[in-house]
Length: 337
Image (tube, rainbow, N blue to C red; front, side):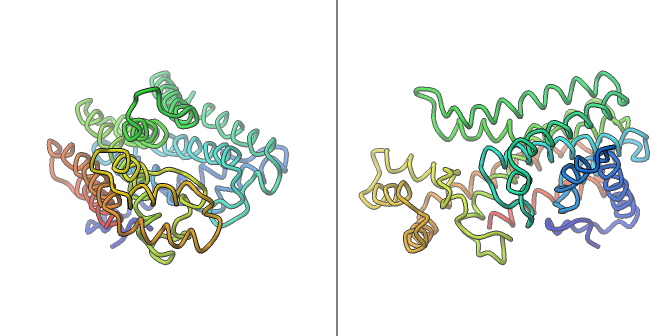
C-alpha cells in the first residue's frame, strides 16, 4: 500500500493508511475553504497554488505524528491546514523574490498577475492561517509565530549571505534549518501536540521534523545535479543555471580554496561562475560537477541528516506510524542516491 507520492511511502497497515488518507482529504477541503473570499479575484489568486497540487509533505507529517496520540482530535486537521497555508504563502513570496515564472507546472502568481498581487495573496494566506490558529489556542499561536520568525530569519540570512569569517557551508545549513526545517518541525509538533501525545514524544517528533526537513532539501540539491528530468521531475541543473549555490557547489568552492584544491577544481569554479544560460556551458558544468567529489560529499551530508532524524525516533514504541516516519528517512537516502 502506498500513502503518498512522490515519496513512495509504503504503509502495510490498513488502519494507518485509512487514517492518513482521510486526514489528507480533510486537509484538502480545509485548504479550499480557507482560501475562499467574498471577492472572486482573491479566491482565484489564493487557490491558484492550492489547485495546482503539491506534495502535501507537511500535512502528511501532521497526520503521522498525530498517531502517537488521538489522531481524531479536533485540532489535528486544522493545524495541518495552518502549516500548509503558511508553506503556500511563502511560495508566493519566494516566486516574487526569485522572479520565477512557473510553480508546480503552472504560471506563478507573479507571472500571471504581477508582483503586487502575488505578495498580497501570500499575506492573505498568512492572515487566514492566523485566523485558524486563534481557535487552536495561544500555545499554537506562539509556536507558529516562533517558526515563522525562524523562517523569515532564514530567508534574510540567505539574502544577506554569510558573516565575515563564517563558514559558507555552516551558513547554508543554518539557512535551510530556518527556511525549511522550522516549518517541517512545526508540522510534526502540531500533529503530536494536537493529538494529546506525551510531551517527550512531542519533543522527539519536533527534532525529527527539523532534521528531516533539512535532509529533504539537501536531497533536492543533490538531485538537481545528479538526476535526469524523469527522475527528479524538473530540468537537471536548474539551480546551476540560475546561479544558486547549493551544497554541492559550496563543497566544490571549499575544496578549490583549500590547500588540497587542484587546478581542475578552480577551473570548474570559474565555469560555474560564468554564464550558464548558454546550453553548451551548462551541459559541461553539469557533467563535470556530477563527476566531482563535491557531489558525493553533499550526498553524504544528506544521508547524515536523514540518519540523525531516524535515530531520534529510537525511544518511541514501535508502531506503524513510527515505521512510516522511518520510511521517510529511507526515502531521503534513496532520493540522494
